[in-house]
Structures are given as C-alpha cells and as structure tokens.
Length: 318
Image (cartoon, rainbow, N blue to C red; front, side):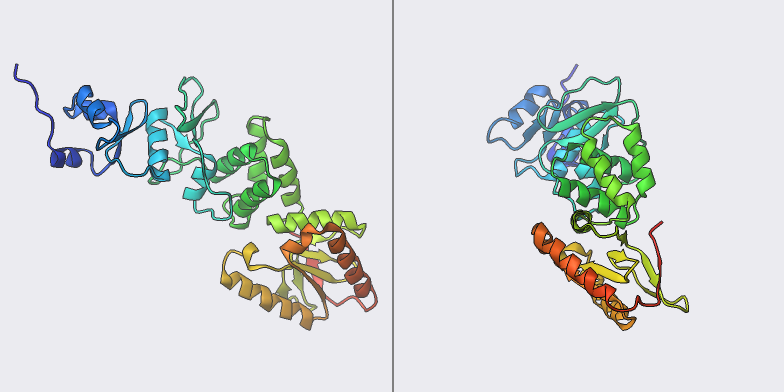
C-alpha cells in the first residue's frame, strides 16, 4: 500500500479552518505522523506544544486566547470556561485580569489534570454553556467560581458588584448559585453578597458601608431612589440617610463605567442640591483613612440635622 503523504501547508490550513491551536489526534487524522508533529514542536521549531496532545501551529508568543483554546481541547468534550476568563469574555471590565491557569469545568466523572495550563474542576453541577464563540459558564456561575478563588476582598467586591450593576444577574441568582456550589472559599463571597443585599453596587460603596457602620450613625440606604413631592425622580445617590435627608456620594471616574456615567453623577449632584439635600462627596482614596472618613461623615450628618429635612421621598433598592 502506498504511504500517505503529509498534507501541504495550504491543505492543512484549509482542513483546520484557520485554527492555530489544535489536538494532535486531529493532525494525525489529517495525515501527519506523530514523529513529524514532534519534530515540528522541537525547541526552535515552527510549532509549540501547549499541553499533552495539544499544539500551537506557530512558534510566537502564547496569548491568553491560545491558553483558553488549549485548556478546552485538553479538558475534553463538554468543558466550559468559568471564573475570570469567562467573565472577561462575557464583557466584564472591572475585575482582576485573568492570569495563571485557565479555569475550566468538566463532568464529575472525568479524570483529567491541568498540565500546568488549566485548572480543571470536576463538577456534578456542570452548567450548559452559554451559546457563542466560546463555551462559557453563565455569568452567575462564573462570578462565584472566580470569587471563591480570590483572596482580596475588594477584588471579590469588584467581580460580584459589576455583574449586578450591569444587570447580568441578580443578587438572588448569585445567592442561589452560592448555595448550590462548594462551600470551599465561600466566606468572602458570602460576606460580599450580604453587602450587595444592602444595596451596595461597587467596591467603593462597600468600603463606604464599613465607614458608615463604624460611625455609630443610623444605617443609610444604598442606591435609594429619590423623588420630589410631585413624584418626579431626582437622583439615586450612593448612600442616603433618610432621617436627615443626607446624600453621600463616592466620587471618582475610576468607579464609574464611563465618562458619560461621571457626567450623570455631576448632574444628579446639582439636582439634589436644588432640592435642599445636603450632599457629602468623598473620594474612594479618602475611605482608606477610616478615622478621618468617619469624622467627616459625622460632621456632615450633624450639619444636616440643623436644617429642616427636605420634602423628598426615598424608595430603597428592592
């Protein structure tokens, strides 16, 4: 029987539909021998081996996209991306950048190591992948999987607050997902979800909540909606002390999603001032100095008590 010749480069490219990260067994099925593949993946060769049975058909730098594709191919059928990688592909921007092993979920009965490339998590609650170019875990699952592995409280806050703020999932969905999953690493996530349950919608607001709790003042409402006596909407301040009509704003472009959001912050400041509302503005950096922030909040609260409460109606976040 005549020996099958290896496919030419243009034939290989057409067969792989432009893919640059592929399984070795796919290349073998196309006519390449394993010795040829190994030779091409030698040090200084034209290809690179990314994981057992997975190669990149280039020798340039390995991108995060390459790592994601290789992790999925290595993990096998039905694998889905989760954690920070999935959130980034879902469009989240305020979280830590994905780094290190790519987190993938696989069926509970599968035995597969990560080969240094992937964090392969076996689960009996494997979610259906969200339709799209990449097989992604739903936002709530991805967010909780990320939160369980983060150790910095503000990073957990950034992840969970953003998915709620962008209305990609609700606090109730996050709490339900938390109860379904493993209890390992869930403490921080549970505490941050308690903050979100109070209406907190950003890491900066969570830090402000800690300042408010330290102040001894009545607890404010977070992200309450304010209306004038005719029912016209005024604004939604970060925090609202309803008994004295005091609004507390955490002011920084860093903690808004866009310059347009910052412009709206300035507009609502003017709208509240026009209604006689006392507005306290604090930079997120100022919250790090807990004692100073507490003193400023107490002074402003005391000032607000010395004038009649403005005739506005506040509706707490539902």
